Length: 152
Length: 152
Image 1 (spheres, rainbow over the protein chains, first blue to last red):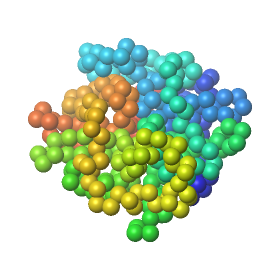
Image 2: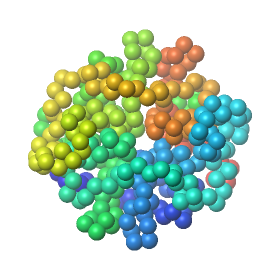
Image 3: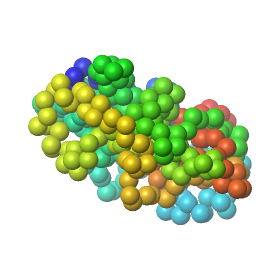
Image 4: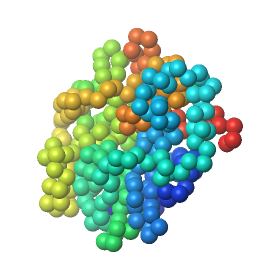
């Protein structure tokens, strides 16, 4: 099996979208991550769900988790309201990992090795020109592996 | 809100369980990760889904993703059959990250900051004695944050 056979249509955001929109989109689609695309429909970032969540966590708390202990419960429930109109591109980390992208002809083993290495439960699948064709999720990959396994 | 209010009952494995069992359990429960417990019901590892997947990827491919390109498609579909009877404890990485564990009284902000920092979409929730009480998933946390948000 190839990535082309297990890719799913996934909603995407651009860097200009609000972080709050991105989080709602991911949660609403029950996706394990989110793909950010540029104006040409090419992935510019593939964010694991935890790193989409990270966009919502105030920077001081990202750097010092113990600080969160000092915030009372009511405010701790509402931290992501402070996001306001901040956009995805404003919140992306400066240091970027290798992008979690595979070609349409990637095998299941290639996809699994990349997911494991980059700790990304979502891969962007691109055509020869680097345009986004869809996504492969960890859940979709595991289901495909189970189907391929004759011992069931 | 506190972790105690959003924790879910989650299936667990022990180090003696087979890796193939662990993968099927996680996929079947549609969990974003898996908690490994010791004989006293205490978490000994909290594995993000991608790191459960990693247990199934042959070591040579973990270290050199380009190697996967050299394996033909039929064999690339079946790599995880080579696992045989390997157990979870045999496949756990030697270097362990800080465990993704919170107390029952952790706030949503604490849980979010820890998930983001450890890149773990699953947290183990423990009582004062370190015994596993349940799990908090990224999806569950986002749903709780959305409920807490009066701007909806």
